[in-house]
Image (cartoon, rainbow, N blue to C red):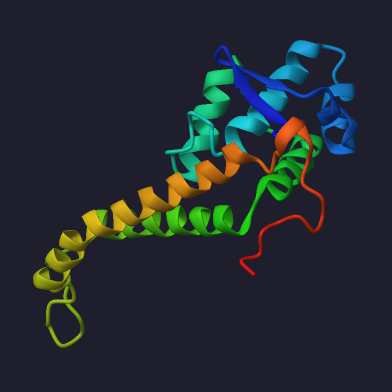
Length: 180
């Protein structure tokens, strides 16, 4: 089920989203509903696969989202953090968890490649970074990126399908196709 979604470039949510205590706490704590809207939007932009900020690393994403939404220095308080964790938990499937891990590892690989020092030597004065190994790693990146893109497409398809059935009925607990 889509608790949050984008409509005309604006984050929106289903009325039942606020029935979940963690989201209701964010909405209710703010007399200023503009701030509550911004905080719920922050949660969507940080955790949803459909977020326009999804291609940033986690650290970059938080800075970019805060900069885009809030006009002043802002940090998520405990209620927002709890609601964010709840949204992440509710939306995460096994394939989405795998995709997040793959993104994280790709970010680590990118950082590693950016920091290679070809002149670095060990205690025996031998080069630590073998250019041929680095070149081989770089040559394998298109396959890695293609595989990641395929996984991302599959997860997006899974998210878009959202478990809905004909007539808007939700899947029952035992209605998933388990391949058997």
